[in-house]
Length: 456
Image 1 (cartoon, rainbow, N blue to C red):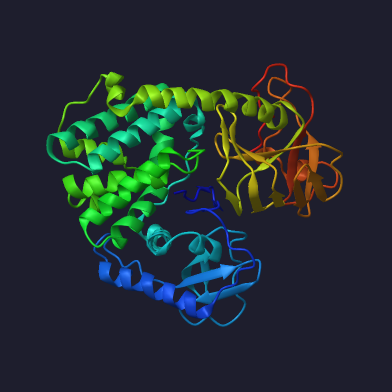
Image 2 (cartoon, one colour):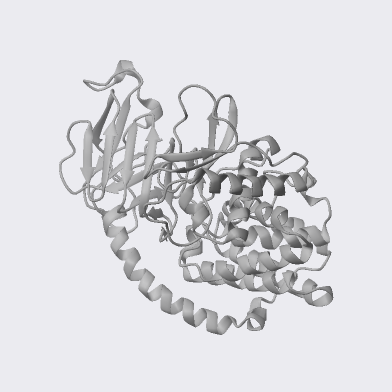
């Protein structure tokens, strides 16, 4: 099971199942049945989980056929711009917050999965009211050998905890928290970045399971399934929360009743679980043998050898070579499938990436690098950059009036003005008030791994 990502105000693609339906269009009667299923589950919950009802207006749409269905009559006037491709997200329509589901997301799974997806989305609809909105975390470390292995071991221990009780459960929880602590000590910034994603997306995945389940046993089985499926994902960056969230959530339900009233956007689910177990921390990470860690490492090493070849090629394209760098603040969509984290550089997304921003619009289908801090996007430059419509290998960008492309210095070269330092009074010729400069750099990098100059 995979999940959505969100950076700045950029909604990323959510694929919670595999496959797509060709030549599909929204069937009103079928959509109405799905709306009724989700509403029935919302009404059964009656605000029990989060203190407010999950129920609210929903839209199911298919961009390819331009068909849609709504759970209540459409407001008068022009409809909003819905997320493109197979992305979902909140939309404001007629003064209310709706949640939009792409048809392909709901047809790519069974009834239980579809209901969990819809409840997941409805949590996002009320998430701003709950104060549980966080910025996305940069978790490129989860694509490294040690980061991925540690997360997989944490999940195996969590799954054992979810499926057991008593002393076995306590031991497994201590093991999971030890793997978590060791990984976060190894990778600076990992604790904060992982924590954000578990609050922003993990709680949504937990909600989908907890509200759907007819009993605690159902919730435990669904959480265990999510943990097992998470372990086999080809990429954990942008996807790990769908496994971690339900696992931690159902254990907190067991051991810390009322935890949902305590959780904040600054909380850490692991810390909450540790406070509920009242058990001394485990310091011997050699307990990996309990979870077949040796075999997991061998498989990870095989994967990592192939990954290093891929990363070297991506560094040539997105870090060392000629690139166009632009601010990432805006709204848009992308697909986290097949994404690759480059430690110290960022994450490359490969499918259906769009961004609408103050400077213009980007469409990319063959790779775009989001920087570690999420502030910039970079695409490879393969030819001249002229005019307001720019094109490269699998990408195109359209610049708004007042924005221009200029060469930029590599790190270590003479400083180049930041975005905030540009003012109309000192703007270059042709620059208009409210505009700016988009960075383009093509000089070679002296050492591998260095990034182009970033402009805020």
